[in-house]
Length: 231
Image (cartoon, rainbow, N blue to C red):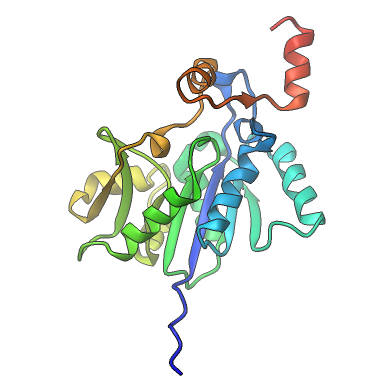
């Protein structure tokens, strides 16, 4: 009896190094949807989509996020999930991405890059990106979901682009590569805004609640501070 070949190895970088300054310094990855932090929700969705190793990139709020990850690991969760801290998170997303890519094992045929503050993504959305990568046109090095002309996440690429990003000058990442190699970028059109919706400001939280019926709750410690100060 013949057996199907093993699925290509898929790894992911989850970007969670931001300071959340426009949200008052709140660690956005610890916002909760339906009682689940966005950090753990994104990890769960990546795993449901078939992702193997996941490297979470921490920076600002690293201690708080690492505590959540360590607690989950202590109860036997987060298999194949590791985390690394970008020592200079203000150097921009390219620096954080390099930290994450360097932390993943070699030999991965597909790389995903996701953001920790995307509250609307579903596992089917990630699977659609992976399918677009598997069926990409010849010459494609990067798949980017797109809604209403706006690029989103997660994105998918292979080992060649991984190497190019790791070897790029400081401050240059996927955005700069994409601008220089438009002919190698394949856009995945989406009729919804889940790929392009993240959280940056208090207005974003209100918009999610009114337009999508999605309520994001502040981390308990931050919530107490805001209310005790009258904010």
